[in-house]
Amino acid sequence: MNDLLLKSYLKSLRLPTMAREHQAAARQIAEENGTCLDYLQLLAEREVNERSQKAAARRLKEARFPVERDLSDFDFSAVPSLPRQTILELASGDYIEKRECVVFLGPPGVGKTHLAIALGREACRKGARVAFYTASGLATLYAEAREDRELRALQRTIQRRNLIIIDELGYVPLTQGAAQNLFDFFSMCYERTSILVTTNLPFAQWPEVFGDERLTGALLDRLTHRMHAFAIDGDSYRLKENQRRKEGTCQ
Ligand code: ADP
Ligand code: MG
Image (cartoon, rainbow, N blue to C red):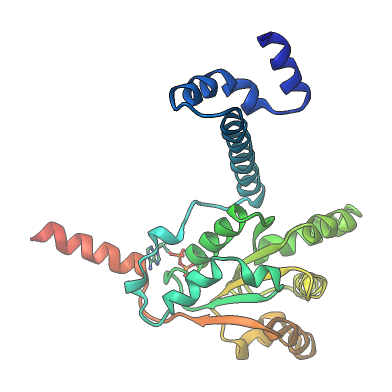
Protein backbone atom coordinates (compact mmCIF):
# COMPACT_ATOMS: atom_id res chain seq x y z
CA MET A 1 0.00 0.00 0.00
CA ASN A 2 1.39 3.41 -0.95
CA ASP A 3 0.53 5.62 2.00
CA LEU A 4 1.43 8.86 0.28
CA LEU A 5 -0.81 8.03 -2.64
CA LEU A 6 -3.70 7.04 -0.35
CA LYS A 7 -3.29 10.28 1.61
CA SER A 8 -3.37 12.37 -1.55
CA TYR A 9 -6.53 10.54 -2.71
CA LEU A 10 -8.22 11.22 0.62
CA LYS A 11 -7.12 14.84 0.48
CA SER A 12 -8.48 15.39 -2.99
CA LEU A 13 -11.74 13.77 -1.87
CA ARG A 14 -11.72 16.22 1.06
CA LEU A 15 -11.68 13.56 3.75
CA PRO A 16 -9.14 15.03 6.20
CA THR A 17 -10.17 12.91 9.18
CA MET A 18 -9.74 9.73 7.15
CA ALA A 19 -6.39 10.99 5.89
CA ARG A 20 -5.29 11.64 9.47
CA GLU A 21 -6.65 8.53 11.15
CA HIS A 22 -6.52 5.74 8.58
CA GLN A 23 -3.38 4.15 10.04
CA ALA A 24 -4.50 4.18 13.67
CA ALA A 25 -7.95 2.94 12.66
CA ALA A 26 -6.36 0.09 10.68
CA ARG A 27 -4.42 -0.99 13.78
CA GLN A 28 -7.57 -0.80 15.89
CA ILE A 29 -9.61 -2.90 13.46
CA ALA A 30 -6.79 -5.48 13.15
CA GLU A 31 -6.68 -5.83 16.95
CA GLU A 32 -10.42 -6.32 17.03
CA ASN A 33 -10.25 -8.84 14.15
CA GLY A 34 -12.63 -6.61 12.21
CA THR A 35 -13.31 -6.81 8.48
CA CYS A 36 -12.56 -4.37 5.67
CA LEU A 37 -16.11 -3.15 5.91
CA ASP A 38 -15.76 -2.52 9.67
CA TYR A 39 -12.68 -0.46 8.82
CA LEU A 40 -14.47 1.56 6.20
CA GLN A 41 -17.41 2.15 8.53
CA LEU A 42 -15.16 3.27 11.40
CA LEU A 43 -13.34 5.77 9.20
CA ALA A 44 -16.52 7.09 7.59
CA GLU A 45 -18.10 7.49 11.02
CA ARG A 46 -15.14 9.51 12.29
CA GLU A 47 -15.19 11.73 9.20
CA VAL A 48 -18.93 12.39 9.57
CA ASN A 49 -18.69 13.04 13.32
CA GLU A 50 -15.83 15.47 12.97
CA ARG A 51 -17.55 17.25 10.13
CA SER A 52 -20.79 17.72 12.05
CA GLN A 53 -18.91 18.89 15.15
CA LYS A 54 -17.07 21.48 13.09
CA ALA A 55 -20.28 22.62 11.44
CA ALA A 56 -21.95 23.02 14.85
CA ALA A 57 -18.96 25.03 16.10
CA ARG A 58 -19.23 27.26 13.02
CA ARG A 59 -22.95 27.83 13.61
CA LEU A 60 -22.34 28.62 17.31
CA LYS A 61 -19.75 31.21 16.32
CA GLU A 62 -21.90 32.68 13.60
CA ALA A 63 -24.82 33.18 16.03
CA ARG A 64 -22.72 35.60 18.14
CA PHE A 65 -24.10 34.71 21.53
CA PRO A 66 -22.85 37.21 24.12
CA VAL A 67 -22.09 34.48 26.68
CA GLU A 68 -22.22 30.69 26.91
CA ARG A 69 -25.33 29.43 28.66
CA ASP A 70 -26.86 25.98 28.43
CA LEU A 71 -30.00 24.28 29.63
CA SER A 72 -27.87 21.86 31.63
CA ASP A 73 -26.84 24.72 33.93
CA PHE A 74 -30.30 26.20 34.25
CA ASP A 75 -31.82 25.59 37.67
CA PHE A 76 -35.48 24.92 36.97
CA SER A 77 -36.28 24.59 40.67
CA ALA A 78 -35.61 28.34 40.99
CA VAL A 79 -38.54 29.09 38.65
CA PRO A 80 -41.36 26.69 39.51
CA SER A 81 -43.74 28.63 37.26
CA LEU A 82 -41.72 27.58 34.21
CA PRO A 83 -42.82 24.24 32.70
CA ARG A 84 -39.51 22.39 32.52
CA GLN A 85 -40.79 19.64 30.24
CA THR A 86 -42.10 22.13 27.67
CA ILE A 87 -38.77 23.96 27.61
CA LEU A 88 -36.90 20.69 27.14
CA GLU A 89 -39.25 19.84 24.28
CA LEU A 90 -38.48 23.20 22.68
CA ALA A 91 -34.83 22.25 22.80
CA SER A 92 -35.60 19.57 20.19
CA GLY A 93 -36.05 22.43 17.72
CA ASP A 94 -39.47 21.39 16.42
CA TYR A 95 -40.72 24.96 16.73
CA ILE A 96 -38.01 26.10 14.33
CA GLU A 97 -39.13 23.62 11.69
CA LYS A 98 -42.67 24.96 12.12
CA ARG A 99 -41.43 28.56 12.11
CA GLU A 100 -43.11 29.26 15.42
CA CYS A 101 -42.17 31.97 17.92
CA VAL A 102 -41.08 31.80 21.54
CA VAL A 103 -41.45 34.65 24.04
CA PHE A 104 -39.95 34.83 27.52
CA LEU A 105 -41.60 37.55 29.50
CA GLY A 106 -40.58 38.64 32.97
CA PRO A 107 -38.70 41.05 35.23
CA PRO A 108 -34.88 41.35 35.13
CA GLY A 109 -32.69 38.54 36.41
CA VAL A 110 -35.13 35.64 36.16
CA GLY A 111 -33.18 33.81 33.44
CA LYS A 112 -34.81 34.98 30.19
CA THR A 113 -31.55 35.63 28.36
CA HIS A 114 -30.08 32.43 29.78
CA LEU A 115 -32.97 30.41 28.35
CA ALA A 116 -32.83 32.24 25.01
CA ILE A 117 -29.10 31.56 24.61
CA ALA A 118 -29.46 27.96 25.78
CA LEU A 119 -32.22 27.26 23.26
CA GLY A 120 -30.25 29.07 20.56
CA ARG A 121 -27.14 27.00 21.23
CA GLU A 122 -29.19 23.82 21.20
CA ALA A 123 -30.64 24.87 17.83
CA CYS A 124 -27.11 25.40 16.45
CA ARG A 125 -26.13 21.92 17.56
CA LYS A 126 -29.19 20.50 15.82
CA GLY A 127 -28.25 22.14 12.52
CA ALA A 128 -30.13 25.46 12.61
CA ARG A 129 -28.54 28.76 11.66
CA VAL A 130 -29.15 31.27 14.43
CA ALA A 131 -28.52 34.97 15.06
CA PHE A 132 -28.61 36.71 18.43
CA TYR A 133 -29.37 40.44 18.63
CA THR A 134 -30.52 42.78 21.31
CA ALA A 135 -33.61 44.67 20.17
CA SER A 136 -31.78 47.99 20.22
CA GLY A 137 -28.74 46.44 18.52
CA LEU A 138 -30.88 45.15 15.69
CA ALA A 139 -32.65 48.48 15.32
CA THR A 140 -29.24 50.16 15.05
CA LEU A 141 -28.04 47.64 12.49
CA TYR A 142 -31.10 48.39 10.40
CA ALA A 143 -30.58 52.14 10.68
CA GLU A 144 -26.92 51.81 9.67
CA ALA A 145 -27.76 49.49 6.79
CA ARG A 146 -30.37 51.94 5.51
CA GLU A 147 -27.86 54.75 5.63
CA ASP A 148 -25.26 52.74 3.76
CA ARG A 149 -27.83 51.38 1.29
CA GLU A 150 -27.06 47.91 2.53
CA LEU A 151 -30.49 47.00 3.75
CA ARG A 152 -30.83 44.23 1.17
CA ALA A 153 -27.61 42.61 2.39
CA LEU A 154 -28.79 42.73 6.01
CA GLN A 155 -32.17 41.32 5.05
CA ARG A 156 -30.51 38.52 3.12
CA THR A 157 -28.32 37.67 6.10
CA ILE A 158 -31.38 37.52 8.32
CA GLN A 159 -33.34 35.46 5.84
CA ARG A 160 -30.61 32.86 5.76
CA ARG A 161 -31.11 32.16 9.46
CA ASN A 162 -33.61 29.69 10.85
CA LEU A 163 -33.93 31.30 14.27
CA ILE A 164 -33.46 34.92 15.28
CA ILE A 165 -33.20 35.80 18.95
CA ILE A 166 -34.24 39.31 19.95
CA ASP A 167 -33.11 39.99 23.49
CA GLU A 168 -34.43 42.77 25.73
CA LEU A 169 -37.32 44.03 23.70
CA GLY A 170 -38.87 46.91 25.60
CA TYR A 171 -36.02 47.77 27.93
CA VAL A 172 -35.24 50.92 26.05
CA PRO A 173 -38.09 52.94 24.52
CA LEU A 174 -37.66 52.90 20.77
CA THR A 175 -37.51 55.93 18.56
CA GLN A 176 -40.07 55.97 15.80
CA GLY A 177 -37.41 54.97 13.27
CA ALA A 178 -36.22 52.08 15.44
CA ALA A 179 -39.78 50.86 15.99
CA GLN A 180 -40.40 50.95 12.24
CA ASN A 181 -37.18 49.01 11.62
CA LEU A 182 -38.10 46.35 14.12
CA PHE A 183 -41.56 46.15 12.66
CA ASP A 184 -40.06 45.59 9.19
CA PHE A 185 -37.88 42.90 10.67
CA PHE A 186 -40.80 41.07 12.29
CA SER A 187 -42.83 41.34 9.09
CA MET A 188 -40.00 39.90 7.05
CA CYS A 189 -39.61 36.93 9.39
CA TYR A 190 -43.32 36.23 9.55
CA GLU A 191 -43.92 32.55 8.77
CA ARG A 192 -40.44 32.32 7.32
CA THR A 193 -38.09 32.37 10.28
CA SER A 194 -38.59 31.47 13.93
CA ILE A 195 -38.17 34.33 16.36
CA LEU A 196 -37.38 34.08 20.05
CA VAL A 197 -38.03 37.26 22.05
CA THR A 198 -37.15 38.12 25.62
CA THR A 199 -38.94 41.08 27.12
CA ASN A 200 -39.91 42.66 30.41
CA LEU A 201 -43.08 44.08 28.90
CA PRO A 202 -46.53 42.48 29.05
CA PHE A 203 -48.07 42.57 25.59
CA ALA A 204 -50.52 45.25 26.73
CA GLN A 205 -47.61 47.66 27.10
CA TRP A 206 -46.07 47.03 23.71
CA PRO A 207 -47.89 49.92 22.02
CA GLU A 208 -46.04 52.29 24.39
CA VAL A 209 -42.68 50.95 23.29
CA PHE A 210 -43.48 50.85 19.61
CA GLY A 211 -45.31 54.12 19.92
CA ASP A 212 -47.91 53.19 17.35
CA GLU A 213 -51.11 51.28 18.16
CA ARG A 214 -51.71 50.15 14.62
CA LEU A 215 -48.16 48.96 14.08
CA THR A 216 -48.10 47.15 17.39
CA GLY A 217 -51.47 45.51 16.80
CA ALA A 218 -50.24 44.14 13.49
CA LEU A 219 -46.95 43.08 15.04
CA LEU A 220 -48.60 41.25 17.91
CA ASP A 221 -50.97 39.58 15.49
CA ARG A 222 -48.00 38.19 13.65
CA LEU A 223 -46.02 37.25 16.70
CA THR A 224 -48.82 35.56 18.62
CA HIS A 225 -49.77 33.46 15.64
CA ARG A 226 -48.56 30.05 16.86
CA MET A 227 -46.51 31.32 19.76
CA HIS A 228 -45.02 29.65 22.82
CA ALA A 229 -45.18 32.30 25.54
CA PHE A 230 -43.72 31.88 29.01
CA ALA A 231 -44.34 34.41 31.73
CA ILE A 232 -41.62 34.02 34.33
CA ASP A 233 -42.20 35.71 37.64
CA GLY A 234 -40.24 35.72 40.84
CA ASP A 235 -37.11 37.34 42.17
CA SER A 236 -33.85 37.87 40.36
CA TYR A 237 -31.81 34.66 40.34
CA ARG A 238 -28.60 36.64 40.65
CA LEU A 239 -29.82 38.51 43.74
CA LYS A 240 -31.01 35.27 45.28
CA GLU A 241 -27.67 33.60 44.52
CA ASN A 242 -25.75 36.50 46.09
CA GLN A 243 -27.97 36.33 49.14
CA ARG A 244 -27.47 32.59 49.41
CA ARG A 245 -23.71 32.97 49.12
CA LYS A 246 -23.64 35.68 51.77
CA GLU A 247 -25.74 33.59 54.12
CA GLY A 248 -23.42 30.66 53.41
CA THR A 249 -20.32 32.60 54.42
CA CYS A 250 -21.94 33.87 57.63
CA GLN A 251 -22.55 30.40 58.96
P1 ADP B 1 -32.80 38.09 32.48
O1 ADP B 1 -32.43 37.96 31.05
O2 ADP B 1 -34.15 37.54 32.80
O3 ADP B 1 -32.62 39.48 33.01
P2 ADP B 1 -30.47 36.43 32.86
O4 ADP B 1 -30.80 35.26 32.00
O5 ADP B 1 -29.49 37.41 32.31
O6 ADP B 1 -31.80 37.18 33.32
O7 ADP B 1 -29.97 35.88 34.27
C1 ADP B 1 -29.07 36.61 35.09
C2 ADP B 1 -27.96 35.67 35.55
O8 ADP B 1 -28.49 34.67 36.41
C3 ADP B 1 -27.31 34.95 34.40
O9 ADP B 1 -25.95 34.79 34.68
C4 ADP B 1 -28.00 33.60 34.38
O10 ADP B 1 -27.15 32.59 33.87
C5 ADP B 1 -28.33 33.37 35.84
N1 ADP B 1 -29.60 32.67 36.03
C6 ADP B 1 -30.83 33.23 36.02
N2 ADP B 1 -31.78 32.30 36.27
C7 ADP B 1 -31.11 31.14 36.44
C8 ADP B 1 -31.53 29.78 36.74
N3 ADP B 1 -32.81 29.47 36.96
N4 ADP B 1 -30.56 28.84 36.83
C9 ADP B 1 -29.27 29.15 36.66
N5 ADP B 1 -28.81 30.39 36.37
C10 ADP B 1 -29.71 31.37 36.28
MG1 MG C 1 -31.75 39.48 29.81
